[in-house]
Structure formats: C-alpha cells, structure tokens
Length: 124
Image (cartoon, rainbow, N blue to C red; front, side, top):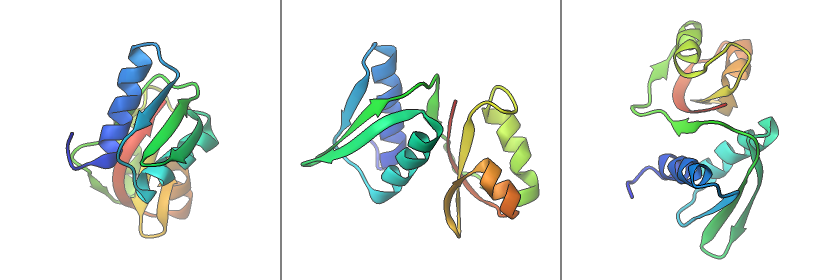
C-alpha cells in the first residue's frame, strides 16, 4: 500500500467490485476519504459507509468506475471542462471530484462557483 489513502481505498473498491463483492473494509481512512465517500453517497455510487474500530466499511452503490487521479492536476476554473472530457465517458455521466479552497466538491459545483482546484478522483 502507498501513502495515498484515497487512491488505495478507491483501488480496493474497484478490485472488490471486479471480484463480485458488494462491500469492502478499508484499513486506513481519513476525513478526506470520508468526504470523498460522502459525495459518492450523494450521487449514488456508494450506498453506505461506517467506521468500525480501526476500519472503514464501504457498501457499494451503482458505479462502473471510481479511480483516483495521479498526479493531482491543479486546474483553473476555465480549464475544468478539459479534464471532465478526459476522465468521464459522457457529458452528464459521472462526477470529477475537485479539492478547492472552499472544500471538496464536484466539477459541476466548482464550475458554477467559478473555482479551480486540484483534481482528486472521478466516478461514474
């Protein structure tokens, strides 16, 4: 495992989904990962997540892909659409998560507020 907790958790989710499982227990977690999962839960990609002892149990919703973006690109608000086209298969399908100075948000919210930031992950 690497030092990137978000990337590790999203990789574990993808591996468990490919293995036909409906949930995964992640050993390391952080508040930032929980923020990513909260946005995934709002969009329906994560059904539920709970902190249990030292682990984080994540139940899957309906998603095809959820991956971290490495390296994390710093993007201006006007260039955000270029990365959305790069990572998402269609215009209204999925979300790109952007870490801004106002917190973690989807690419739609960042575009409405005209805020740039760092591309963290994408889900669809």
